Length: 206
Image (cartoon, one colour):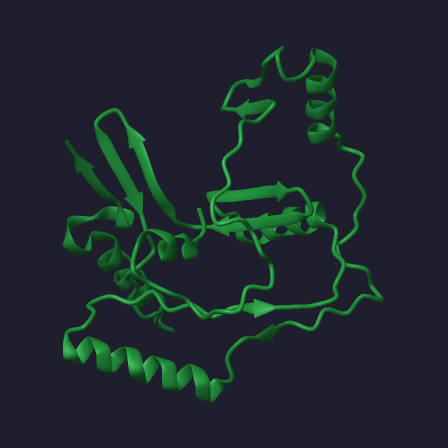
């Protein structure tokens, strides 16, 4: 479900440029599921959708250790990454949001900016592998929707339902760093224990 789905279910609108044209909602049923835990790997599939041979091919392609050392971007293919904002536009937008907070129109803002590149070819799998090698994000994902791709390396869990518990792990809320190692460690502990919420967990039961 994309952010702009809100425009379909609420009286809202967006004027942000959409250069990707992903569907607002996309549901799918996987033909093959590869499930990993600490001691075993399970390959799950439905005979009505695929065959054992095809499931094994998919598994083998995922575990193939003969992959090349390509970076994912050709050496001759220089990527020109740009922001949708100029610095002045960004500062002006922040000032406007601060004014909304002062007026009481809003109390929390998740303000983002887009960085983009055009006319660029990349090896999506290699870029995804390199991204996760760098960030080691706990909630990463690689999605292919026909000829469109979404590569995610998120440190946030939006929501998880486990029994009668709903668990959210946002990263909203931070604290300054210190050049002094001892003070930096104290600030880390302060952030972890703020409001009694270790690691910024929010747990609701019902």
